Length: 360
Image 1: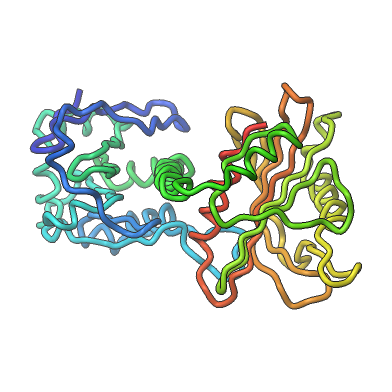
Image 2 (image 1 turned 180 degrees about the horizontal axis):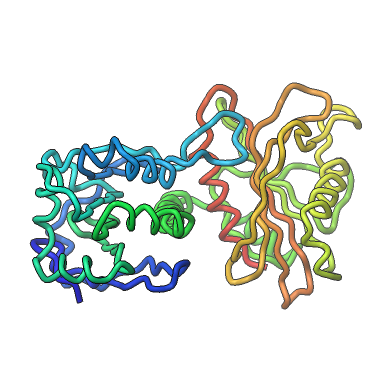
């Protein structure tokens, strides 16, 4: 075990030997959480502690690529996280109470900032890190505040840490994305539309937690396998659509076939004002896709831009397609948003939380 000084002495360090294996967990720490302040900070915000020289160089560039990567499927560029860079000597008590903290350390520099960061490590820890290039990360919870996540990224030299960041970018991002979804869910589901949840279970045989504010949208035609939920406020319009059909083959997971299915259901059920005005995919913007684990089931995630076929209305959409073996169904879940003139990252994060709590 690598021993870290001060508060870090209670952490359990995990060795990440396999390139794509990152375990986003840490040892349970025996501390009185009642004595800790509650973590502070905005959703999606990260306090990044790194030596100024490193931040301005190649390592800083790679850190920005990791945490400030642009989110796909948004009409205007928005970073995945809002990163607040802090010089090590400025990492004082109130900043240590932030919800998300990343501390970056390498042992190949002797600047003032690097020397400050090395104080967190024992000589034995530094020796182990220098002798084992596979050691590069720890995660700990409630280190300085309740509800906090602290990630330590470190290596014997800058080049080695850059290599780890490149190879494990998605896994590192998922650590914070998963934690942010947990926090959002804790607030979002405090007030629920339980009558809608009961109706979905009775009429469609699936479970879904529905936050307060959503309502059923009356459809222009009868449907046994389609649901539209909508939450409208003065500055945004959030929509959740759910459709399902019998699973037949793996070809149903091909992106082209998914988009064709989407076109069919949207054209039939999302008609607005006139028969020819309904939700479509913006043809000028490509849809991104990736394979995902959707609540333990194989799934595909899609992100893109939607609009109405005959109106200047549109925005981002996020969709999941997965197969539920118990029901024999393949599901299509989508959240699409209209929020002109405002940032959309956190609205989409909320809809992602709603979609991901779906149980077939």
